[in-house]
Amino acid sequence: MSDAAEIQDAGFDDWIDAATAGEAYALECPNGHGSLPPRRVCPDCGSTELEEVPLPDTGEIETFTVTHVPTPAFADDAPYATAIADFGPVRITGQVVGIDLERVETGLEVELEITVSETTGDRVIGFSPV
Amino acid sequence: MSDVRVAGVGLTPFGNTPERTSRDLFAEASITAFEDSGVSRTDVDALLYGNFMGELAEHQGHQGPLMAEAAGVQAPATRYESACASSGAAVRDAVMRIRNGEDDVILVGGAERMTNLGTAGATEALAIAADDLWEVRAGMTFPGAYALMAQAYFAEYGGEHEDLAHIAVKNHENAMTNDKAQYQSAIEVSDVLEAPQVSTPLGLYDSCPISDGAAAIVLTSEAYADEHDLEAPVAITGTGQGGDRMALHDREYLARSPAAREAGAEAYADAGIDAADVDLAEVHDCFTIAEVLAIESLDLFPVGEGISAARDGRTTADGETPINLSGGLKAKGHPVGATGASQIAEVATLLAGDHPNSSFVEDATAGLAHNAGGTVASATVHVLEVVDR
Ligand SMILES: [Zn+2]
Image 1 (spheres, protein in one colour):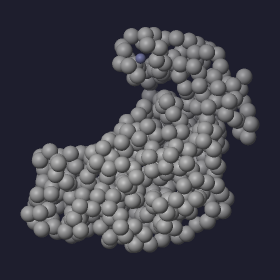
Image 2 (tube, rainbow over the protein chains, first blue to last red):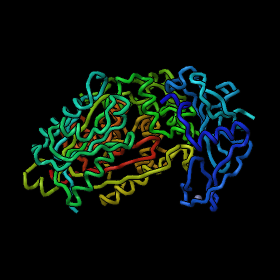
Image 3 (cartoon, rainbow over the protein chains, first blue to last red):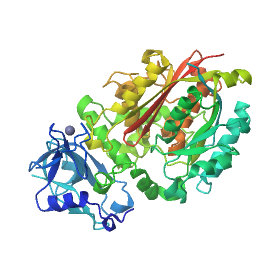
Image 4 (cartoon, chains in turn orange, purple):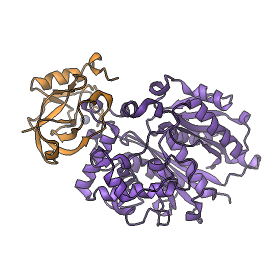
């Protein structure tokens, strides 16, 4: 289970590749509902016409926590901050990097930065302060 | 519509018994439930059984028929998996099958074996109730998810860790008389505030323990109860289920639980009562903040007021609406697959006057059981009422 790197997840891995290249995207239906891949159907309205739209360069932290008791896949990473950040069409969960944990706060402006787990070396969605 | 009677209930002690298999736990709970009910095993039409992490904890899938065997029941059996709402979902289907006239007697319940995994293993196993790609791989744990909700709640409605601490204190206090509870010990607000942090703002004492345990309930149709002259004064009169997006970040609200609201509204309408009629409730307090979100979603307290309800004594045993008189998940324990059925067993026992804490709710006629899965992507709510005393 912690061997996430062993498992190829088409759609998700592609998104991580894109985000690493600075080309993160959301999926959008004709009714303007945003969602994250992998997905064939808009979860809001059932439309099957999903289009990739670029994510804005920055997002804003809406809520966060500092985790001291991690799963084994992050044993050597703890303590670390997890946050939900608003990127316009979608919200994303990620780890806040490049900042002291005490300084993480709601409203903080961040950009995506794909990082790696110190424990497993697997790629992890990260947010770094702008 | 014909009532669905709670004929008998059985719970194992909830706690730390890593050597016990789930089949052993469920066998014990079912023996108690059958003895309590006076119903013959040969009359059982089906077993509906909740379990979440059987594959991870004991390398055991397909637990339905295994548990029918363990309970000595010759009947078709199905496992329900809906994370922490597994046996709540099983009870809901049992109620609907009996109402439909499909079955007269159903054994419903659940079990979970968790402590043999250790803290890290259980944390990992629980995490699979979240979205693996978008949450678990970002390092989100289960306490972490509820911590995100707690921070969002504080930011939107106010409140602080000390308010949450009063919830933990209350639930420990309630568990003191519950000999099935994992913790039968009092704690103080300072204990909660000074406990090691798990995921800020939640600490060790804001979190339910990792538990082993099982719950079983014998449900019958009203006709069967009458015909066999059963002593079954409590009925499940309302059932509801709600759903939401899997990942927390995909929800419209980060500090509310619409799935629980939907489940509650459906259960109230089904029973023909409203929140003001509820005398007591068992709600899914896997973390202290979860109790706040639950009592607000169930309309027992207005949105924004749930946070102070325990501190103000409104949800304590002697308060206007006692919440988690059993000790809740927090102090009674949370063997995931058993939890929903155990809550219903507690409400039935409280209403029947057979619970050590029944003295706090002597005139109670209606109770609520709220069971949530994941970060409340699933929720079931049941209304129980005294129909024959
Ligand atoms: Zn749409």
